[in-house]
Image (cartoon, rainbow, N blue to C red; front, side, top):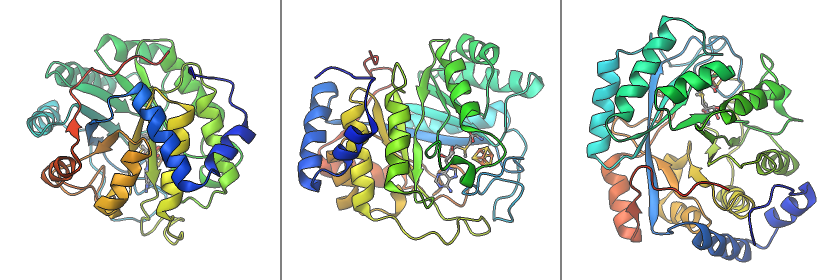
Length: 327
Ligand code: SAM
Ligand code: SF4
């Protein structure tokens, strides 16, 4: 079966509801048609500007509206970012993602500074991804000119549930930014979070939106909510591993050529649970050397522990720039 852009919600729901082992088998089969199933992409997230964000995303430790453990930090120096990226590369990382707690990119000296970072880290032979909030088409073009490989902009949840989670921007704002990135050759990274209190219908609706984008996002992160003390979602119930596996497998089947990233929340999964996620089609992870993914509130497994796990499972790290284009 080729890549489809006309998925109906009912079809996606029926995939999501397939008996679990059959679902994993189908996803594993599709995975092998489109990817080298031995390879896992290992990414490193660097928070280049932390906290004091004006947005009210109710899961986020970096929103200025909530009292969390996160200490705001101004934009990092380029040398600091390049050093972290070099160390990550030495540990097998092939993609570096730079995150800024901004509502949107502004055309100012800080953006020039980020463009410089993108150039320099790309020059190390790494895929560079940025997640900087909303972006105009012109800003996307400038990032492209600097060598940017990917832009992350998550939908997070369904259109229907979005305003329960975030009130300071709309779903259409999100889709507009993705569309602006699509006017360039920068690839798109967009996915969501499990555990926000959404229904299965919301998960299916979000997958439906992603799978009807043409082309599909080249990368689809599936996050498990990291419950951050001080945020409105700190007391959400845990998400069963089975929901995570279903979400990954469904994303894999309907967006077969995309990378599916097991992102936030992986630190709480056992190796057996992670192996099941890889079997269901996850082929990308975040790894770190400082114990956290983006801020102190999101734990992340270490490079060496991850390398040991990959060795154990007979998996290898995917080099930079080898993914096939999504058609
Ligand atoms: N400010 C930019 C934006 O919102 O696009 C980029 C940074 S933001 C931290 C990037 C993504 O991290 C969010 O879209 C969300 O999906 C994920 N994220 C943030 N906090 C999280 C949490 N507590 N648990 C799981 N995922 C989270
Ligand atoms: Fe700001 Fe991004 Fe956090 Fe929302 S997710 S509060 S936009 S840093």
